[in-house]
Image 1 (cartoon, rainbow, N blue to C red):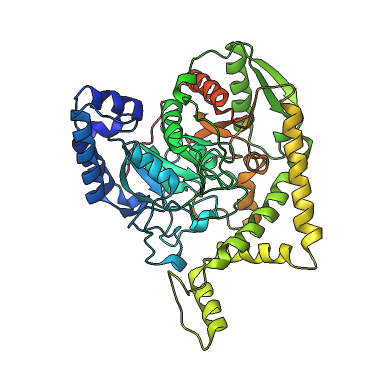
Image 2: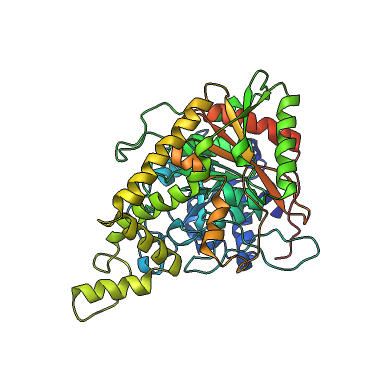
Length: 489
């Protein structure tokens, strides 16, 4: 039944409804696929017993005619989402052995809609990374490889396990989180679709915090329709999250009409950065041409404060991280390294428990929040954030969506980028969306000269994911991206 893992979520839904296969058969096919793909290191905790139990419940509901929207659909859950009684450690040593007694709201929404959980997915430690090289459990490997090469590649980060698992067909879809591009960047590097919804669309309750004013959950899926199906279930108002917006969740799948006539698509000149590869620029122009041929109007726009977005982001995000991660001290849960007194126990635990990248960002955050530098760095970064938001608000007077590249390059090899600043530049096209709280989606649109996936990004107005999905669906159809990684694992 290995062919079952080839089915998209929309096809799984139809197949289960038509009794072509059972949820139990589907789940077993995925469990077998995961066991044969451990070299990718996408999962850090497999939950086959739980998956089979949930699948049995789904089969009973299907037999009784009580199917829910995601009945029997096997998903992977990023290790940032709390799942009752299951390993939830944000891929950090400092949370060793932590198993929550509750479900994150997003995870609970998926389970309530009938989803089956295959396991917890690998990620950059505390979601801090753009290559999935900072996980305590080791690198995730991208199923894609350059043409004629056996060199391993990164899947992007921080949701690298999610993107790798979806691309390798070892889950039908996955949850991710996006603080500065951590859904869209790995989706672009693995030939999958990833959407960061508007800030406040999905509850953050039960998700391990990185930067609370930037973090947002979203799905990674094989196509735009599957992403729309998943987001409908993930999104909700949650009184336990004060940033969760009390607004109805639309039927995103219904927005996939294929009609974008009259839509105005903005192309921001500031995204043509120095040193951008010609193949990225060419694909961007091709994307604009596809949309224009479908009846959209392409408009040149300016987002003048874009050049300040990356430095401002790398002040705001570490500042919030240093505050959020202060709770990990060896006292209440997770790792504890003894010391001569309480302070030395704190120091020893954090030194052993946090990886180098997390330590770097905590130190940066603590520095920019310190008394002598707060106004010079943090306050100034927040002002720039307001200007970035205003740039978008002015752009929305002229256009409905904005088209940009998703990443400055295709996937690269582990260890290829060692300079932290160069690594941070992988987020150059994505961080503005988080700084402004807007929705953004990455859609696979072509292959690089080396045969690797390249993505295009669409940015939308706040809480207008429907227009984003409608436009992405059309672009996906015109791109006709059907390439798959050759199975070497």
